[in-house]
Length: 388
Image 1 (cartoon, one colour):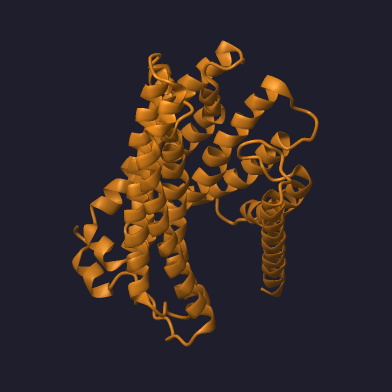
Image 2 (tube, rainbow, N blue to C red; image 1 turned 90 degrees about the horizontal axis):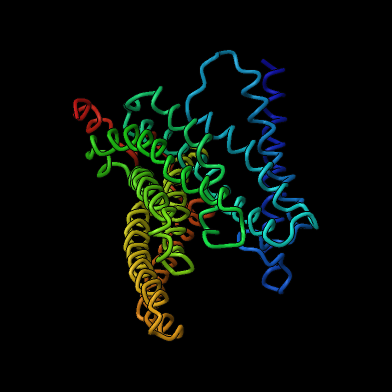
């Protein structure tokens, strides 16, 4: 037992070092960009000199997890473990290859840029979000997922089909046609992974709506999982050339990106934080009502944000394809919808401030001791709902 404890402590320390290095590097990157120092590439703005430390921080996360998996005493690994191990292996490969200084240029650089940009969502953020959803939804509801084998089908379909989908952002660009065609095919084939995940997660969460009422964290996680399905199906549609012709270079793409990164990943992680922190700290959330307020502010704000940019982006694309209109008109048509974006973003920001205030009081204020299931699912309600 002492030896196991020492190993666990060493892994925890390494993970903590990684967290410190990662956040310091992120802060340095934000300050560098604010000061005008950046690499000038979308999704790769942070200077590569700082990216080195992000890679080191990420490695400090990955090593303890991989060591734990290798030293496990059972052969079975739950699907959350598959997603998290894959994310921590895939991300360093993506990040290091995309940030190699002086290697990529011209059309090759654009190809590498979008290979990274899409994969940082699909091979890094998506596994983190899906892995969390696969853990928290059955954990909170108290029932298993529909099919473990189906969950592995979704995982391996993601691993097989997602890696090249980013090239559909270069349709019409100076890149080989086969590269774009491969991306379109793989984007459409991602429907397999999405449907597998949807069957597993949505049948459980939507089949137990009582838990949505009883568990505030579940609202974030389950809604975020639904947003993953919508964002992924929308992404497959956007990759089709006829559809891409309208949406390319418009605010429609911005709305889609936020549906995936914010609507899916951020919502799931918000729910995860709300569920885990009381159990880690032993302190109950000081303002439970603030969790509900946070939820409705970000849901309402994001709805306004997403719908505004989606409609505005579509009209923008149609205007750009109209040869009888001046290009400036395609920009002017988006003004009311950009106002909607600002309104939605304001509501989301207010939600984030509420979250930050609740978090600050949890750590630094006086709160009650946390009792298991006190703010998640009432045991009496759960017992009554086993047949739901």
